[in-house]
Image (cartoon, rainbow, N blue to C red; front, top):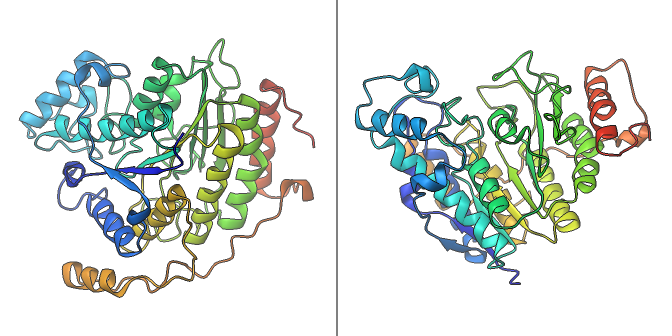
Length: 391
């Protein structure tokens, strides 16, 4: 097996565009690729164009009726289809919506194929991670659920078990829903509490359907959680449950909307904390799945100050050569941002934060919402996976 790493990307992926004023601007993907190129990261990745998924592939997760509705919405964007979640206040209709969404699906499935067939060890699609889409409806800026389709492709091509870890600030509800009754897929989501943030799901008690008990693990975090608390929660739960599941491949979603500057949520992580999470997931893939790792993007709406830096760190880790946080942001990229958007870009690849945390083994503090939440997930989920929650 080659140790080579891959980015699935072509400019056509930026056509997934809800239009001016929508928070999920494709500018964030374009700026990430430009920054990664300026940093030399793309020189270490095999960059391949994305195929466009056909209806049969999309139909492994989505209903034929829904796919037809997406086509109609793209042909006549002024006619909303509320039944299928199209043309809502979150998920606008736009021209060629089906084709643009199918392109994102094709990118994630190509990343999964390349990893599973041994072309590369790691592969990424930063335009993907559209984790809210349901089998018969769009939701939360997501039309087709590319991570779920990529996971289903892996199952259909021989993967016995797939673990999915979602670090977006929003619960990975669509992926969880698709595989809630499937014991072959472990879905793990760390997210802001459903009591304070869309989509209002992802409590610790959501653990999997009949015959798949324990294969959904949810870690709801209190608003205001920063690097130390987030990493404490991650390390208290995620490595143990993924190791217990013994996946054939690890699929991860890297929404960076957990950042303190993100306008749509209430966590307080830094780019440094996000980088630490990406490193931990890389290491986990090597520990449990022979290094087989498929990484997608996700949310992230601080499109100049946060997303390009966070995902450039991710791509460098995928490439096997992490960027020193103290690395200056290339002046050519900063000048490009100034000229194109009239904005002053960050100077360095760090927020100047220390991503240290106290390990769960140091003790449980029942006076904190964070520790109560960690303990609730451990107490509910660990026994279902044959783990002792009390250590």
